[in-house]
Length: 87
Image (cartoon, rainbow, N blue to C red; front, side, top):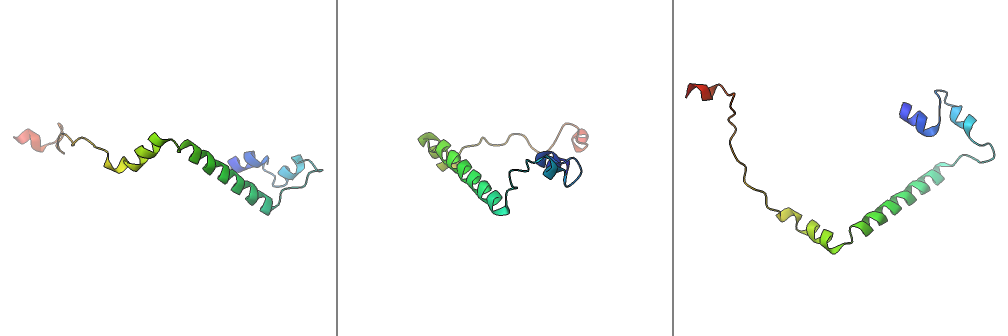
């Protein structure tokens, strides 16, 4: 909750954010906030697409499910197991 207060400029009083705002500028409406968020999302997706447009990266992503991993070594038995002491 304190994160939201700091983000929106509140001091604990719910009306504190409106006290610090410039009275000449109206508060953004819900539609404006949604439009800004959608524009930011589009910008992030565009930047991600530009970053992933490299041929090498595309090839790595295409063949990532075929990557080789070495076989596991050892077993489930550990040095401090009780059953190993009997042998």
